[in-house]
Length: 262
Image (tube, rainbow, N blue to C red; front, side, top):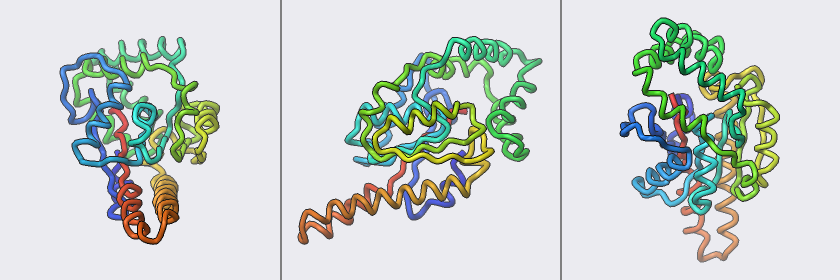
């Protein structure tokens, strides 16, 4: 999912992608979890890598995790990159539609058509990416999605806590994503140090279908954070300037990106 970002942003920045519980290559006991659980998992990943602070980001559910990571451990999060995500809890209507979708997803006769529909909804007219993801989804146990769906459908709102997030934040909103524009604007407005960018005619997975626009925005944002930290620290005095610059580069050039659940 983040292949375009890996190609464009490294080796200038170190990108670490990981699969959350219930997704990708991560194996668990299929026990219920929340995005707060995943946020603690993210911090554990940073611990294992020996990274004290990182720019944390993600798409959709990855964004839910990134927000909660910043709320749990603000001292570990240097900045946030949030794509196609919001801070709201699901509405009653969304929950009803999701339950209907899952019931049909478990039916072998309807799942292929649903997979095609889901791919078009998330990706758009890009045939190559749609084919890759449809094949990926249909190759997995249909019932394995239940636990991950539980985290999605039972998520809590963090709207009231957004002002607690003081790190620099980049909010990228594809105009044709599943996230209402008003939700994305609210997300950016309530985080004190947030910048907002819209990508026209892009759907949920804009980082795949519109990589040039997304990569440019992320690169400029990360460079700004690295320069800002370096300048701030060098003001502490000449003797500290060399170490401060190097420390700023180490921290500013580690971007930990959450894979979107698949």
